[in-house]
Length: 85
Image 1 (cartoon, rainbow, N blue to C red):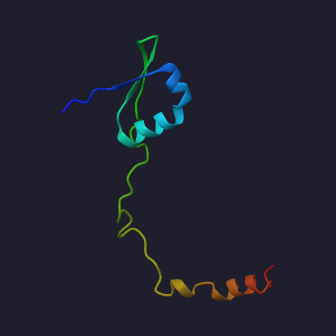
Image 2 (cartoon, rainbow, N blue to C red):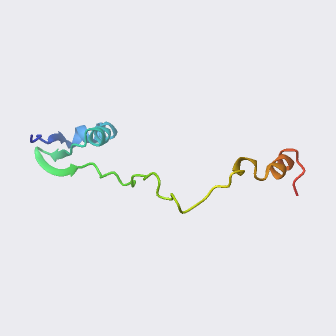
């Protein structure tokens, strides 16, 4: 299904730019800005630039000690007690 790209006059774009940008991003639909009825520029959403995180990429590459939750308990307690160097 082909969508018609919305055209907005430049005055409206200046007045409502933040809202227009939010809508372009939200709906992933470009908007054309026209001056005196002539299309001049197009605002388009950028692709998602953050790479998707993949679970399990370090599986088998690192190990966590069994006593991980107890490591450095004495040193941490000293820091909280103000006894650190």
